[in-house]
Amino acid sequence: MKPKIALPQNEFQLKDLYNFLELIFDDEYRIGIAEALLERLRQKRETYTEDWLEVILEYLGEQDLLEQYHGLLNKFDNGEISKTRINKLIEKELRARGYPAAKLRKDWSIVKKTLIKLGIVSRTSNRLNLSWDFVERLNTLAKFYNLWRAGEI
Image (tube, rainbow, N blue to C red; front, side, top):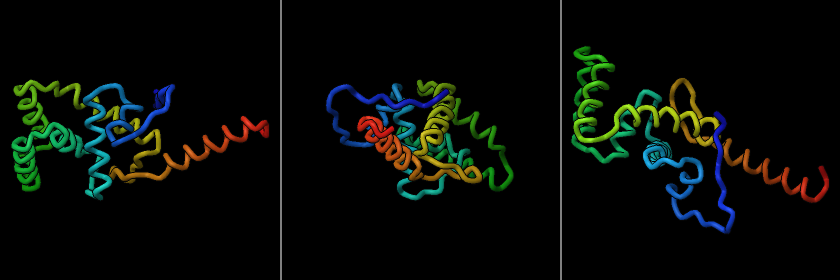
Protein backbone atom coordinates (compact mmCIF):
# COMPACT_ATOMS: atom_id res chain seq x y z
CA MET A 1 0.00 0.00 0.00
CA LYS A 2 1.37 3.35 -1.00
CA PRO A 3 0.35 6.18 1.29
CA LYS A 4 -1.47 9.00 -0.45
CA ILE A 5 -2.26 12.57 0.40
CA ALA A 6 -5.43 14.05 -1.06
CA LEU A 7 -5.05 17.75 -1.76
CA PRO A 8 -8.34 19.63 -2.19
CA GLN A 9 -9.02 21.14 -5.62
CA ASN A 10 -9.82 24.59 -4.26
CA GLU A 11 -7.73 26.77 -2.01
CA PHE A 12 -7.45 25.26 1.43
CA GLN A 13 -6.10 26.27 4.78
CA LEU A 14 -4.64 24.05 7.42
CA LYS A 15 -5.65 25.31 10.84
CA ASP A 16 -4.46 22.44 13.00
CA LEU A 17 -2.91 18.99 12.99
CA TYR A 18 -6.31 17.33 12.65
CA ASN A 19 -6.94 19.20 9.34
CA PHE A 20 -3.53 18.11 8.07
CA LEU A 21 -4.18 14.48 9.00
CA GLU A 22 -7.54 14.58 7.19
CA LEU A 23 -5.50 14.92 3.98
CA ILE A 24 -3.86 11.56 4.73
CA PHE A 25 -6.49 9.49 6.55
CA ASP A 26 -10.22 9.21 5.89
CA ASP A 27 -11.12 7.48 9.15
CA GLU A 28 -11.82 9.37 12.38
CA TYR A 29 -10.10 6.76 14.56
CA ARG A 30 -6.96 6.81 12.40
CA ILE A 31 -6.86 10.60 12.41
CA GLY A 32 -7.23 10.64 16.20
CA ILE A 33 -4.58 7.97 16.75
CA ALA A 34 -2.18 9.77 14.40
CA GLU A 35 -2.83 13.07 16.16
CA ALA A 36 -2.18 11.54 19.59
CA LEU A 37 1.03 9.89 18.34
CA LEU A 38 2.39 13.02 16.64
CA GLU A 39 1.62 15.22 19.65
CA ARG A 40 3.51 12.75 21.90
CA LEU A 41 6.48 12.86 19.55
CA ARG A 42 6.40 16.65 19.30
CA GLN A 43 6.51 16.81 23.11
CA LYS A 44 9.60 14.55 22.89
CA ARG A 45 7.94 11.82 24.99
CA GLU A 46 9.72 8.53 24.46
CA THR A 47 7.42 6.42 22.33
CA TYR A 48 8.08 2.91 21.10
CA THR A 49 6.10 0.78 18.68
CA GLU A 50 4.88 -1.35 21.58
CA ASP A 51 3.30 1.74 23.20
CA TRP A 52 0.35 1.45 20.81
CA LEU A 53 -2.22 0.76 23.50
CA GLU A 54 -1.13 3.75 25.59
CA VAL A 55 -1.39 6.03 22.53
CA ILE A 56 -4.89 4.72 21.79
CA LEU A 57 -6.01 5.23 25.40
CA GLU A 58 -4.67 8.80 25.32
CA TYR A 59 -6.56 9.45 22.08
CA LEU A 60 -9.79 8.05 23.53
CA GLY A 61 -9.35 10.12 26.71
CA GLU A 62 -9.94 7.07 28.90
CA GLN A 63 -7.92 8.32 31.88
CA ASP A 64 -9.00 5.60 34.29
CA LEU A 65 -8.07 2.89 31.79
CA LEU A 66 -4.75 4.62 31.22
CA GLU A 67 -4.07 4.54 34.96
CA GLN A 68 -5.07 0.86 35.07
CA TYR A 69 -2.72 0.20 32.13
CA HIS A 70 0.19 1.91 33.92
CA GLY A 71 -0.53 -0.12 37.06
CA LEU A 72 -0.42 -3.31 35.01
CA LEU A 73 2.86 -2.20 33.42
CA ASN A 74 4.33 -1.94 36.92
CA LYS A 75 3.25 -5.54 37.52
CA PHE A 76 4.90 -6.47 34.21
CA ASP A 77 8.14 -4.83 35.36
CA ASN A 78 7.97 -7.01 38.49
CA GLY A 79 7.38 -10.15 36.40
CA GLU A 80 3.83 -10.63 37.66
CA ILE A 81 2.02 -10.40 34.31
CA SER A 82 2.82 -10.63 30.60
CA LYS A 83 2.39 -7.82 28.07
CA THR A 84 0.02 -10.05 26.11
CA ARG A 85 -2.19 -10.47 29.19
CA ILE A 86 -2.14 -6.71 29.83
CA ASN A 87 -3.23 -6.01 26.26
CA LYS A 88 -6.02 -8.59 26.46
CA LEU A 89 -7.34 -7.16 29.74
CA ILE A 90 -7.35 -3.57 28.46
CA GLU A 91 -8.83 -4.54 25.09
CA LYS A 92 -11.59 -6.46 26.91
CA GLU A 93 -12.41 -3.34 28.91
CA LEU A 94 -12.40 -1.22 25.74
CA ARG A 95 -14.91 -3.58 24.14
CA ALA A 96 -17.06 -3.42 27.29
CA ARG A 97 -17.11 0.37 26.88
CA GLY A 98 -18.24 0.09 23.28
CA TYR A 99 -14.94 0.68 21.48
CA PRO A 100 -13.91 -1.50 18.52
CA ALA A 101 -10.69 -2.78 20.11
CA ALA A 102 -9.57 -4.95 17.18
CA LYS A 103 -10.16 -2.09 14.73
CA LEU A 104 -8.21 0.32 16.93
CA ARG A 105 -5.27 -2.11 17.06
CA LYS A 106 -5.32 -2.45 13.26
CA ASP A 107 -5.69 1.33 12.84
CA TRP A 108 -2.58 1.85 14.99
CA SER A 109 -0.63 -0.39 12.64
CA ILE A 110 -1.90 1.43 9.55
CA VAL A 111 -1.22 4.86 11.07
CA LYS A 112 2.31 3.94 12.13
CA LYS A 113 3.21 2.40 8.76
CA THR A 114 1.69 5.28 6.79
CA LEU A 115 3.45 7.99 8.80
CA ILE A 116 6.76 6.14 8.46
CA LYS A 117 6.34 5.65 4.70
CA LEU A 118 5.52 9.33 4.24
CA GLY A 119 8.60 10.31 6.22
CA ILE A 120 6.63 12.14 8.92
CA VAL A 121 7.80 9.63 11.52
CA SER A 122 11.01 7.60 11.61
CA ARG A 123 11.73 4.44 13.55
CA THR A 124 15.07 3.60 15.13
CA SER A 125 15.31 0.39 17.19
CA ASN A 126 11.51 0.46 17.67
CA ARG A 127 11.63 4.04 18.96
CA LEU A 128 9.46 6.44 17.03
CA ASN A 129 10.57 10.01 16.28
CA LEU A 130 9.41 12.95 14.23
CA SER A 131 11.32 13.17 10.97
CA TRP A 132 12.30 15.97 8.57
CA ASP A 133 12.13 13.56 5.60
CA PHE A 134 8.55 14.59 4.83
CA VAL A 135 9.51 18.25 4.40
CA GLU A 136 12.49 17.33 2.25
CA ARG A 137 10.30 15.12 0.05
CA LEU A 138 7.73 17.89 -0.39
CA ASN A 139 10.51 20.33 -1.33
CA THR A 140 11.81 17.84 -3.91
CA LEU A 141 8.31 17.51 -5.38
CA ALA A 142 7.86 21.29 -5.54
CA LYS A 143 11.26 21.78 -7.23
CA PHE A 144 10.54 19.05 -9.77
CA TYR A 145 7.11 20.44 -10.60
CA ASN A 146 8.43 23.98 -11.03
CA LEU A 147 11.26 22.79 -13.32
CA TRP A 148 8.92 20.55 -15.30
CA ARG A 149 6.32 23.29 -15.72
CA ALA A 150 9.01 25.70 -16.90
CA GLY A 151 10.01 23.14 -19.54
CA GLU A 152 13.43 22.56 -18.05
CA ILE A 153 12.78 18.83 -17.56
